Length: 469
Image (cartoon, rainbow, N blue to C red; front, side, top):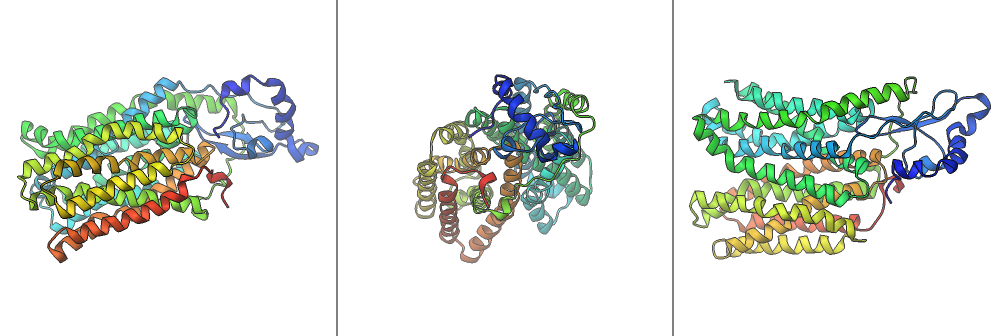
């Protein structure tokens, strides 16, 4: 069930007048004070919501002033501008990571990074996504989402620019962390913005921004080395993506200004926002979402980190091995577009969960037993199996009624999930070094896939995080 839209509310003024005023005044009518509950989060910023039956149903309601009178609703930000802004943000969500991965050898040589420091740099994204992403609900309770996104994209821009201007390994790591902080916040906000602005197009819009994310990932990985060679420095291959991040700031500036003006005009004396009552960490659904997100991310990062080495060991030239790895993300573009649409139309997600498990299991078995003979087939199966990523992003929106619930669930699932994901490349590397082959690492990924599927059965059934206890 999705929240009613502004147009639906406007269509029933009589009913709102009859029921909304009681909800606004509530039990404190005798004292002339209004009861105010937690904010409804939007790109235009939080507004106070009334308590009562409508709030209990998870729908957003306009604020009330201290006398109990209902204030007019703020103007809803233009959907087209929000959509453009979301797609531009999504293009940036992995470019800073995959461009560095493609140029890691050059960066190690240029900055004199030790093996330990290089390993830390490759693990830094999951650490940042886990730790900093968890702060996003706190930020949203204090500032409008559009303003938070402006700052996040500026952090990404400045971080990417500064890290290519330094000769210090320590400063490189710190500025990379600044860039990743911006990505971590944006990771959490996008599902919330889909829920807030496109409640009846969740699958389509999630598919669009997931496809943009996949395109950005692929293009950055494929073009970082050619750009670096064209300009004669690895710094150009990394720094060029700062320009793309700067472009992503532009649509959010007018939205942030509009949010600030609307907030002042509508509710200049609003009571302080209460903390969200949605606590995913205390629910079975919240943990299942986190485990599913973590298990699929673990496999995804392990594949990105080690698949090229597996194909090299199988006898492929390094260039061919790199192309095969790029094929996984390239083939994943249509999957990223279609998966959210399918998820939004199905009553239960079990067919998708089992189907994705089957594709991934077949790919892992094939890579363990015949990596050279069936390489193209395994790449195709992996691309389908990696559809678990757009599936879980869509499910975050499907399993919450409100924007507030969506951002809480998104933050918990992603921050906890990335802690799990950080183990993937590390454990695959340990098993590969200990055994000298790929049977044990593929067995580990199959075990992770079993955990992912078990969690998938929990999140497959229609339910809402706001109802969980």
